[in-house]
Image (cartoon, rainbow, N blue to C red; front, side, top):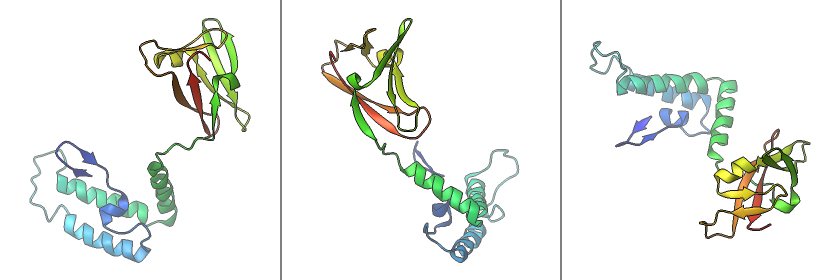
Length: 175
């Protein structure tokens, strides 16, 4: 972990060892040995009085963690999948739908809007969730955006209850 003024940036395990993500086992091992020697707590002038690990100790622990994960092909593959997944912050939307495309179910004082997913489950959102966003739904599915909102439309990304698909619900005032 690199600390800036008040910003904390998480390094990847590859960055901790200063190797590329396609580095070979031998390159990773050589980088680990070098980093372990350079960050070893015995090299730092630390006192035993503090129970809180120093930044030098933290750096050494980071090097150790990186080596423990990247040295084994299975744990490295798992880490690479997690790393790739964390970088995909862009939501991929399967389709855009309108409120009129949704199934509207009234259950007491709550209205549920549902749309079938190809996996067999549903995308859904309740009138309570929409009202928190300033979008009001009547019992028959009539939509009204909050009056103070100058926009005449809005959209909400909905995830399926079972799979990873997402859709965008486009909401037009009065539909």
